[in-house]
Length: 414
Image 1 (cartoon, helix red, strand yellow):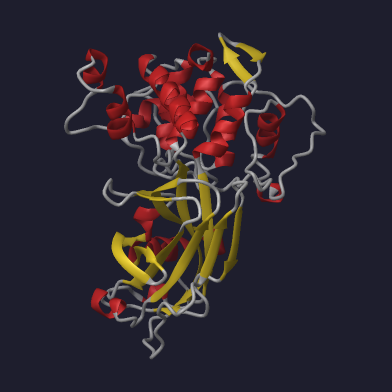
Image 2 (cartoon, rainbow, N blue to C red):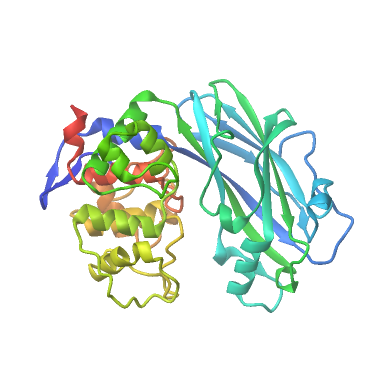
């Protein structure tokens, strides 16, 4: 993300080294994962946190991530009440220890991803039935502490479906970790006691997401200035709020920083529906409220017009299943695909090679768009030379890219 601008329909290349650094500073996303197996037949097996952490995560001095350990081990998950789960009956629990050698960071949200295609089903139920039941009936709890002493629950038992991609912590639960500090996160998984046979003999691949934002004034200022620019140009408004409205912002009856943090919520992961609205407004597309959408799933009214408009412009496409999945958090490869289409970014050097270690994980449908984004320096990799195409992207990152593509960074970068 760096030197490519889109201004008045003309593509321009300009020096943007500060912007290239922004995404690296703004978000470090830790992934730790593993496979767990479920059973409906209760056994005497119970998995609890032992003396040593299950997973060690080190945030290195250069911002790269080092991990080792197994998240779930050989644990079996079966239906249990909350009381049973707390005693280690039927539940799976363990500890993730994070050592920070990088700098002061702030943990603002946690979440999970569950790869639907990697779910191994040992019964005769359809994949969609099993997957949806898994997201509904398997719950996660996370406690925070140090060296196996846990003093606060930051995520109560919450179904995995509500944690997909990211779960923003309550303001009182957001915490910081200083350079040189160590943090333990205890995770406990339980299956609802009313779960049916569709989850018998199922093995699922679960990844935990830990959203770590660096407390760095320059990156926060840059993202803040970009968000203010987008607000002033009517590209973003913010979520419905019980106290503040966009009118309050323009009347200056609310501090802009308060409005950004309380209403815009830049640290949340952005959904596909939100991205359609963002891109539609950025391009000045007219909402098509009368369009008959061909998507099989429900499309929320507030986003329907822009989803229709961006679909008509072939910026957005649905999944092979015929669904749009408006509430799914958009991934890095999906976002660059959408934005290169939206701003007509073309791949010039067809032979360009991506330097990312995980380039083989990029979907074939997104490869050309990722290459185009890399060629024009719209995207950069992580410090460990990966691209992490399947990871969700935050609203702040998406806003910053749009601001850059529109050429509006020039207004506040000087």
